[in-house]
Amino acid sequence: MGIFERVRHITDTDLRVVLTEASEPAAALKRYILKLEASLRELKSSEQFLLKQSEWLSTAIERNLKLAERCEVRATRALEADREETAREALREKRDTLRQVTADERQVLRVERSLSQ
Image (cartoon, rainbow, N blue to C red):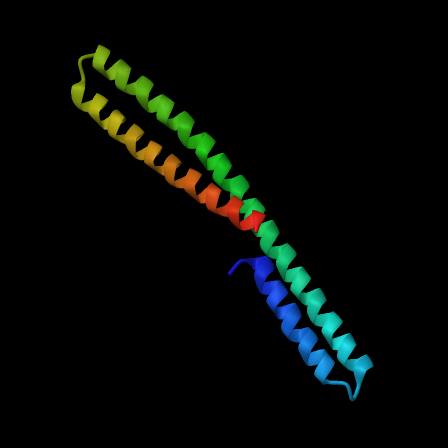
């Protein structure tokens, strides 16, 4: 259930409660408004967290892509120096780094989907 859907559900439920509490409509309406404000603060906080997470992941992706490039350069230099094991190690590190980039990109897509709901 998305954040907006949850807020809508809470709003619908709370509105029904307010309507049934007709004995003190002013007090009930005030409680309802306070609950809505609290829900709105929670929603904004969640959205800000998701935005920060997206920024952090984007930074991590950029950093890991640069690391992968450096690993490839290191592997090339190691082969030129006839150090095959060092080259293999650099290529393994590049492969692992690119796997992490892929995982981070998937996470960014999940965060963006959450924000668009």
